[in-house]
Length: 132
Image (tube, rainbow, N blue to C red; front, top):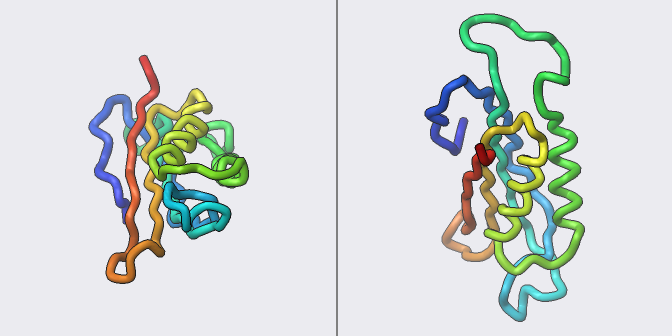
C-alpha cells in the first residue's frame, strides 16, 4: 500500500500513516484560484521508535502518536487561510508532525486532483528528518 519507500535507519521505526485525506483548501498562485477552494489530497507517513524483534509492546497510546492529533492539526493548517504553493502546505504539515518529539521522520504528499483532466493529480512529496 505504501506510496513511500522504506526508511533505511536503525533503530527500527514504526510507520504510522494517514492515507488520502481529502479537504477543501484555499490554495494556488493563479488569479482563478483566489477566493475559492479546491480539493487537496494529503498523505502523511511518519516514523516513531519501534521495538526490534517479535516483541509485543504495551497496548497503550503513549507509545505512538495519535492519528486524531495529526488530522486535527492538518485541518487547522488548512483553515488558517490561503496558501500559494503545495510545497508550503506540505512543509507546514511536516513541521506540525515533527512537533511530537517521538517522530523521527515524516513524509508528506500534497496533491491537487482537479487540475488537469488527463491526470489523476499534481503535487509534491517531501521528507523531513528530526535534527540530531
